[in-house]
Image (cartoon, rainbow, N blue to C red):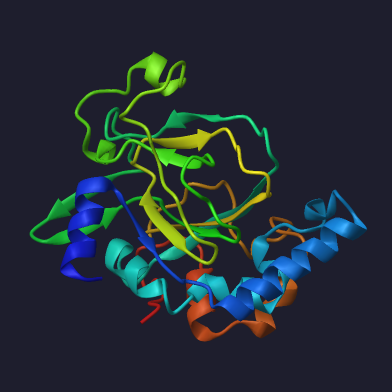
Length: 250
């Protein structure tokens, strides 16, 4: 992370990593999704995790373009807490604003102490399709991860437009990294093409937000089949939370 990127994350609560997915891999991912949707509109229900969708999706877990940022934001013993996709068609409704520096949430926090950033749950959201200005999708109140007062209810419910709420445009293949302490939500999707975002949510080694872990019996049906395919780094990232002897990714 450059000095400017670190400063931006501290000030805004997010950064966008451009070209996080190579163009050829991006085409492969979208072609696979198109094929699934053509066969069965309910295809996503067959999977417990994005990681089961095939090698290009599993590779996002320790994406070398993104992982160094996550290590700086969460430490070298971070873990993947949970993941899910969001696909939206034109006219998809908004999702109210949530998160924020106040009230304090011990699972979703942001601190900086002696030049070191400390985060709770932190998100890597990959755009598989362009998100142009004005198209909707992810939005946030930049800087709200350090807010000292709760977000006012009318603003939280997005009852009217506010200059505080900013949409974040992205190109297909970009990845936005943001702390869950940031007040964020979703604007109505206005673009004619489908919104396709993949959310991988990471946490520090001791913390879990989800109520289950990846390799607990019956927690993620079918995911045990991935275990032989995992690299040492991927295996470390899928470890359950712990403080003592938690595996390092680097």
